[in-house]
Image 1 (cartoon, rainbow, N blue to C red):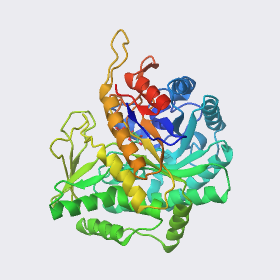
Image 2 (cartoon, helix red, strand yellow):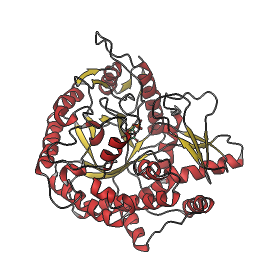
Image 3 (cartoon, rainbow, N blue to C red):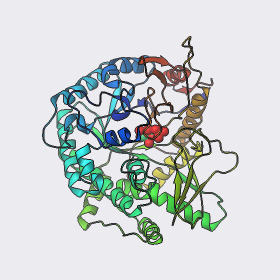
Image 4 (cartoon, rainbow, N blue to C red):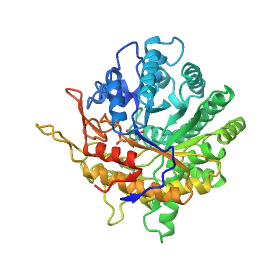
Length: 474
Ligand code: BGP
């Protein structure tokens, strides 16, 4: 056993997201979202039934409690409350979330509630999604409604992984509208997301409600492929500006450093694209939100190793789990490589636990306004199948992954990072946005046909961890 110094009220949680877990996309008046048409057209998989959380949440919350999980990340589907993005409220959607939260509290599983987890209502999306500043006011109306309607919530998250949205919508083209290498739109959306988040925080604080509010970032630590080459060093800085720095500056510092702006402009100039616009009044919002932010959520899965690159942009997404099939080369930024000795998942994500420590220390050292950090997602996607006898899935790879990353969290806590909770992605198996149903992350296996749940070995391991506060060596 390795003793962990987790703070007294540390949360050991499991994470979910509405669209990936709930299913029931056509039930109880739910409105359509950006993914509906996209997935119908792609025809690779359907968002129904997912893991049918909409109907089976009582069982999932009870299982969580039974396995020592004392917090859960859930998101509210904006389109269950406002099927058209604004206007008429759907009572059935509102009631669903009241019931869900009631169940969480009755099982002592603290809900951390996200307002936007990649699922803009279709109407909002068709009106320009996050590129259209008017949609920010609609998001605020929705946020205000939720803040008032659900006063029982102690932890709010404004937006999940703005970077995943901006970059995947407009650079890698893996999220609808699937545009590639449009850096100009990407950075404009990055700024608009920072602003939407900031305005939601400022609104929440003005309403004087109980509870805390934060944001969740996907942070992929970026390193130069060869630390001794200045070209690689600079390429890593550019990639970091695209993935991390503009968001960290905007939401945790409340201003963009000159360095961030210079890097962004360098990328835009290299791609001969329009620079992004920030209005003077936006800065006030960013600043005020950063001063009042209660916590930041860190989603950490992998790191990137970047080489200097000056050719044309080319990206191939590995969405099937065929190892070695992905490519990422971006003009004006750099090319992803893999250093010797670093293992990858079947989806080509480099497994690099030290990246967890480095990102936690970066936040601690470079963004001193931050009072609390939660690891809001960490986990590994695996191909898993239940045998006929329904034997417990022996997911030692997952246990190993979680163990190594938790040790880095512990190390960061010892070195001053204020981490107060950790959520495994995911609580139970569900679908992955760009990879479908065969990339499983759950502590609980879901047979998608029967919708039965089966605890994996990792669930037992996690139970022991949360009960003993020590990393079990199995
Ligand atoms: C994060 C998202 C989650 C989840 C997870 C795993 O980006 O917040 O919704 O999907 O990553 O990623 P993936 O499903 O692409 O494997």
